[in-house]
Image (tube, rainbow, N blue to C red; front, side, top):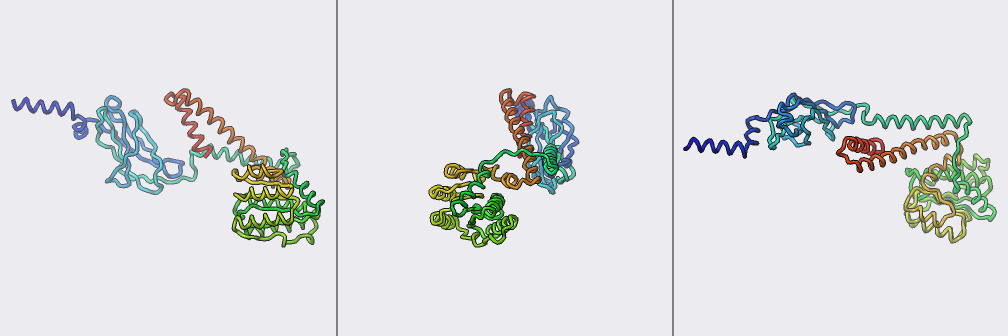
Length: 399
């Protein structure tokens, strides 16, 4: 009777507790020969794992679980689950220069785990000179740089580069000429940011062209600034323009002055000056914020010709509504090439169009592939390939 009871207990434990027994007794064969190596041609955050399958794969093994640790004695942290039949995996997002140990266990159909396969030596992720995943990006950069070089060389050899007309820049001479005829001044605002802002630099470039026209037509140009360094740069640009036009005696540095760094204090001064002196032409070129509408509305109220240019999306509607001409984003940055006509700048501008075409084509292709993958399902082989290609475009090419 007692012997029959023991057999009954053993049978129950085998049926309902088989997972624990198999894990402890090693009934599920573990994977073997686990190897870890630094991933080649990467940023130093990946490790490649390879192993030989369990002899019970695929009959009794449903998956493998991977763990990692910075110490051979643990504790080990869970990383991911790998399907049965797979013999390799790349662990990502590791810390460069740290020691890593890895553990791999087979998981049975009943959820039990085999004995672990553990790496015996530490692997250290190291950064390489070149990231292989970025190879396609390197090709795009070579195409882009090559196109810039080609167009610059083409322009220097006398080739004609077709650049579309920008109405706002074409109107500069008309605006300065009108101010000269009316005997009134021209007002130029180079934004309210310092010289570390690229829009301020673009504004200084346009100021040089306006100053040349003013020197040629003997017009008065006034440049209040909200940064002392911008004042210095504006004085140098205007002085160089007057000198290049052969009229250094007409240059007056007192018309280019510093007001205050305080945003609305600066705007209050400029607004009052506009109402009192009524300039015939107003130019707003640079980075602007809430003061854009105040300046544009004041200039509109005194009947001045107004030309604005900025890359601040939130301020563009105000300039478009209140000014006669507005340079929108890309037009503003292309102004220096457009106004100077220098081969290097024109060639660079033309070469950049190739980069824009590549980005545009990449976006269109990515949208089409993503749509097709959603329609046919990412579980299908072709849909999965499209999904991986879209992720590659987003994370590598367009990032």
